[in-house]
Image (cartoon, rainbow, N blue to C red; front, side, top):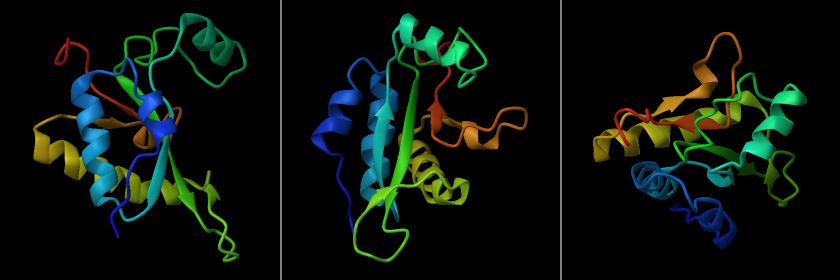
Amino acid sequence: MSFQLSNRSILRLDGVHPALVSVVRAAIAISKVDFTVLEGRRTLEKQREYFNAGKSRTMASKHLSGHAVDLAPILDTDGDGDKELSWNPDHFLPINDAMQQAAANLGVKVTWGGLWRSFPDSPHFEINPQEYP
């Protein structure tokens, strides 16, 4: 089954670096699970809000420059036929698989926040601003 980005997800990619947008677009087509773009480029005010609430540990987020996106799986987790967002960290693994495969195919290096030891961030995917100015 091939998935597509929703119009809302496409709008949320506005301001995100084109290399990362290309990876997200390629990943959805090969992903084993459907996913949505939760957030792309972020305002300083929104970053401050997340920082103050403890949802982020930095005021230098790569979301501020458009070098990061947050993605989440859309699954039928209870078998009732209704799909919804899942926050189970295991459900992000197929998204990472698709993102890494798409990135490799496009020659783009993507880092997944789900592998961070001190503050795992399963929805978070980023590219290095020095490599992609």
